[in-house]
Image (cartoon, rainbow, N blue to C red; front, side, top):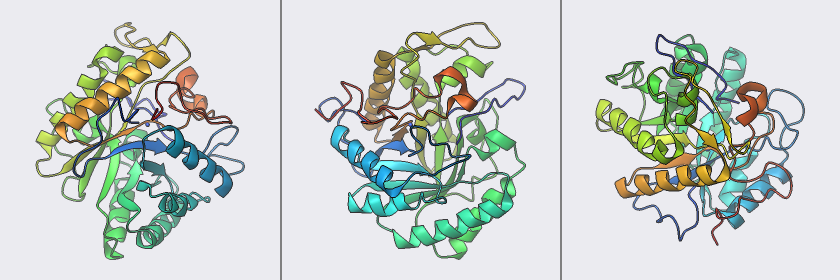
Length: 329
């Protein structure tokens, strides 16, 4: 349910579509920094757009796998409807912290349901849900058409007395107000923190600006974009809420639509390199991050092509095992 779109502005930037790895490989987060994994339970044949939704039993299995095979004790979730609110009680039982996204899109009635349920769960799980977001990549999908929905969500949460810090998550280009000089956008005064998604993989395909970032330079790209946004929003906490690299199809690459370059190679080695090096650089700066994603989702190719189902650090099919070398052992 996201990273699907080509957002074309004169210089074309698109977004995208979530790890810390072994405790031996990555230093534990310091102070209040977070190392989290984006968590969606729409694995196997499940699709968020139709059919059955994830069962509580499946959610439990996936969270248990994440705890057993990775060092993550923090997740970011995508929505609170269709039984996804079960995640919060399951996370609380396992002492997992949650960044919760209230999913917003172009259906106003459904948005209202998300806001109402979001208020309910935020108040019910104040120690588990540590941050909230009114939507994710809504501007990337629809431009400014639903800015009012984001504002309505933020205002509703505040009026209801929700105490968790609130943002709206979007790609770095949107947080830079679609400017190479990275200026504040209209939500600067409305949010408590900045949630930014950064994917050099998709820049390599769609951007006319950053046309060629190989896996070896992806971590530096993440840090550079975060630094720009931190300068644009002084005093705000800035978190990279999605970053990652596909682990397949093995050797696959995207060709930049403007330059013809193909600088990103999909494989497990590069995925590991991008995630480990990024978390290492974040930890040195005491910055937080969320890797995309915990479990691969088979429905993703409907919107993201051949690479859509290869972003997980863990398999999206039973027994849901995580990649070798990425476990806590």
